[in-house]
Image (cartoon, rainbow, N blue to C red):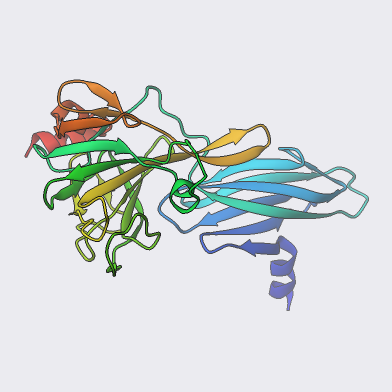
Length: 296
């Protein structure tokens, strides 16, 4: 019985998401520490909004922005104000995939995500509203598409960790413009950016969730035969941003290397040849990874 009472005293309660579990612990002085247990392979951003703070002061204010890295980390600390009075608290939580804090020191350059030497045509995608709402003219950037003459290997455009994938959909019909159920592989980069590659052949994946991938590494095989635009691969980069007191998810254009120069993914280019220069492949590698590359 004594063990149970102590357990209840120190573990006040927990909040559970599919990816992150929050636990609260109280010390002998009545101070509270809130922890996040992240079982995923990438960080998550948490917004904790304290709706009640009675006789407690939050180190981060009423609204706390925190990043839960894989494993256990501290989200917030609550200090008891008056040792002779009781205390209580309550909060609501929002969870976002990725870290809003991670940034690049310099703007990264991405490879064209196909095997080296492959010729492609690049064109920014149109917003889905423009497909289903004929009167809509939404010009927001939503990614770019690389059109292919033949089936080809799709490669990682940057170093990162495979954070999500779905590769078991076999599309039906023909003349498609968009299908939300299509296959994809998602990569999380160390600067908090995601790359999502879509329109992939079912069952063709060469990686799994949790794998670290490098620029030019084979990921899967292209598809697109069911689309009215033919064979292609779609690529979208996105990241979290803190705007005032909110976290927002935005899709962003990126720099690409075409073998000779850098171009923006929001441009239309009729012909590009994919190139995988060693300086870009090794750009984000650790010393250990570089040694392994040099030994090959």
